[in-house]
Image (tube, rainbow, N blue to C red; front, side):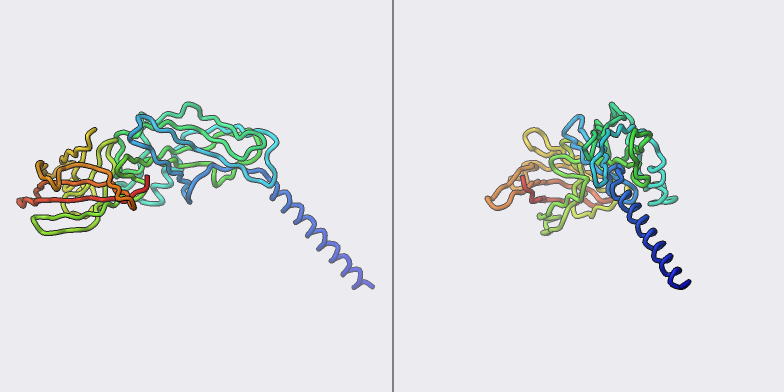
Amino acid sequence: MKQLNVIILAAFLLGLTACNEDKIFEKEQYKNVFALVSDDDYNVFSVVHNLGEAESIGYVAASCGGTNTTTQEIRITMEENDSLFNLYNKGNYDTDIDKYANLLPADKYTIDDYNFTIPAGERSGRMKLRVRPEGLSPDSVYFVSLRVANYSAYEVNPDKDDILYRVLIKNKYATQEYATNYDLRGSKNGIQTQGVKQMHPISANKVRIMAGTETFQADTTVINKFGLILEIDATNHVHISSYKNITVQQIDGDAEYPNIFLIEDDGYKTHKTFLLRYSYKDGNTTHQMKEELRLEFKE
């Protein structure tokens, strides 16, 4: 009889535990928790800003989960805080300070209001940033480091209560969002050459390439030694100049390579095309370049 009573008691306790676990699960399932929207382990959220705009708009967003929508608004106050920024640099580069990301300079952005709301019954809200991207370098990483300072209701996900808003730049010809690789065809010192040439946005109408057949490397010494600037004017004529240290001379008057930019459409594919003619010096050697750069794109 005792054994039967023990079995009955054990069954009762097991049922009670299961019931409590179900209630906890149900409570967790219905819980409303909000989080800042970001991409990876360091809570980076990347936004591409157009160098063709004096001021470009971006947003930091928050999203609220839970089985049911909220019944009251969530008023969120953000603040700038460097903790996540410092963690990102230390975690990625440790003591290699030359590779550290940068905080976006204060004169390059404005946050008019650090407060925003997720309205009752809705899933998201957002805060606006006004970014002035002119003058930013395609070789650098720029962040606005933010975190939730206060909120009025429900809960915030503690793993998603801060964010690194990354500013990427682009123009009509290239972007920092991914490698902009143009197909290269032409000749170097009269010898036919082909390959791929990476292009970087510098300003609304300027891009940077490497001279001749030099390969792009994310190394300041190499970039400064072989970098060229292509400036495209209102008539799509291209002006070639030195980025930093290279000696370069633009050669005009070549009917096949007239130093122009154009859009080519053959009815099947559309290409952005540069036709360039110049010479440059590497040490005491002068190289003659004729090059066509083409990038397929969809308008």
